Image 1 (cartoon, rainbow, N blue to C red):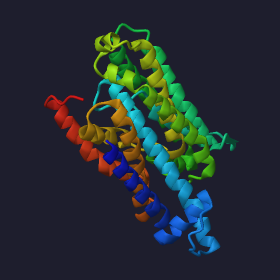
Image 2: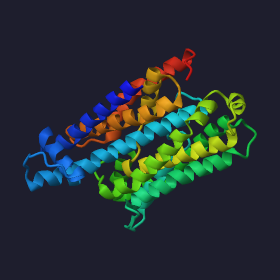
Image 3: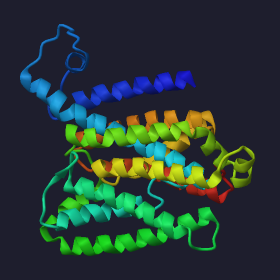
Image 4: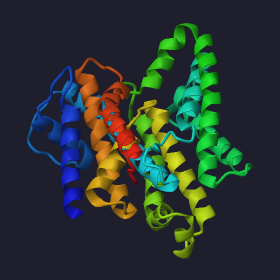
Length: 336
């Protein structure tokens, strides 16, 4: 475990340096490290650079890479949490309608003729955040008023509400006119507009939510074993499930609010980590955070190097084959 964490942190540092240094204007790793060391801790490494280089590193690329890492870590932790709660290896952070709610919120913000900034979020980001949380709240409330088992009810209600929200999104896109391209950009995900303001709004929510999930790792392990086993272990199943669902949804909403809809990170990373260290949440969650951050940082770098294509396209190319492999294993009796 310590070796894996150490190796993951090394990969994360490499992703940071490469992500900040590479682009249309390449910056040597030594200059990149020197600029970051000086701006972060006031350390002078004796390397000289131009003001333009410092602007590129500190004002443009560094917040973008940090935002990608924050989103990747948040989606991976949320994915691991949902997979454990629902005991479903194919669950991802969007399973309860988060994606549909965020997309509809963003589309509404694009359509209405108002432009404003709320707590560091542009109106699109703010509406996406509210839409994601509203969708999850609606799914949770509706799932409690039918006779199905809690997990089955959550999944079916999430599907139904997601379908309804998708219809609303289609109507918003139909009415958007010339703004349709902006909606598509959000649906495909990316970090081309990321900056310090967006990072400052999303980072506390992702960090606090992820930390609180990690503190409830024992409850998550109990729920993974089933409700009866969890009760025997002293877990208040209803309360812990509600709290973990709320925290994972909050982390997901904060992530998609600044990045758009980026798929497969919350599905692929938790599985790879689980294959390496087993199902224990205390091991899976921190490693998933590191893996998700590194994966999305490299995906964003690849998207930039390929001409600023949407990051969601890159993660889909990586994640789709993995997802198909999961489906094949599920048909042959694969278990979480």
